[in-house]
Image 1 (tube, one colour):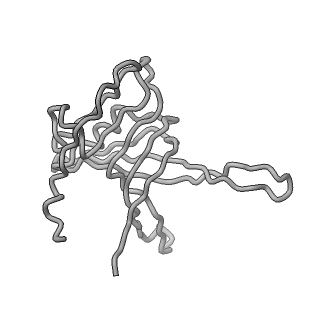
Image 2 (tube, rainbow, N blue to C red):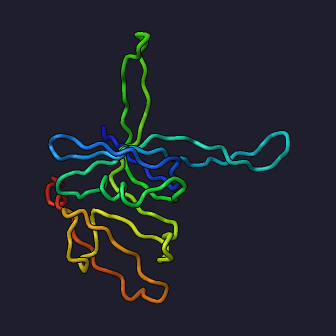
Length: 169
């Protein structure tokens, strides 16, 4: 039986990232994220947004880039972001000896959707399959600036992901 653990969300950051570095050179950025579910209020008949609050983590991961560095540099509270990742269950025992658990999202990829504060174009993001024309592959943690308003040109060629050749079928 196959399993799939994939999350794709568009929402807003609820707090600036908290960044921690490890002695081995690794880094993690933790941040809050909120998405809205729409539901109809049975009393008023109006559609209402019901927020879902999530905890997210993004890591610097060897050949896949420096996502935590990018989050530290560009993420701020209120920024609209598209994230892709997977669910992970954290379990621990609290100070009252009660077993606790929560689901969090480990981010594998993201793209910023808001306009930059300095007046740049909308979008911008990071992808493991960065355009070949960027001259920096996915292993370098490349950040791709979006095109300007009049600078769309042709669609870029995309680089094959390094692990694509390992799939046995």
